[in-house]
Length: 135
Image 1: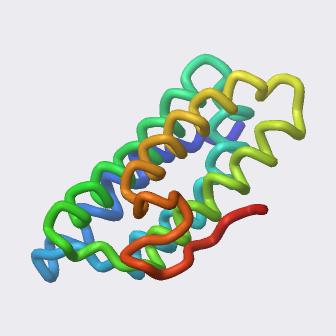
Image 2: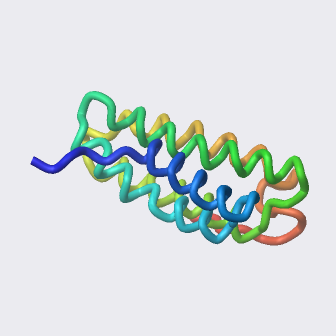
Image 3: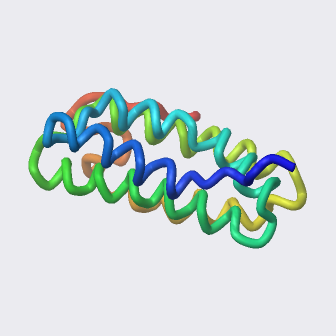
């Protein structure tokens, strides 16, 4: 049997590795990590029914924590916000594809709400630039 995946641990490991070498967050790595959110949602939840949702949620929330910190320092890139929005959309779709994953949608909704707090007042742009929106 294969060991279960753990998005939370993956995020900690990848952030530690990238900051250890340069001392700062490489937003390309952050975007790649965000892009894996829907895959980890499937593998974490299906390979570890008891804790998978928590490990996935921990990973995605850690990435959003980093985004919030970058936003506060005026360093967050529009592409990173757009990638996070796209990742939320993908996770929402994945969570809706299996009845067993209905509970996951609450986690996606909570993360999307945090991300929305970073947007401009119109809720559709970040620093005046359009971001990915599913509709």
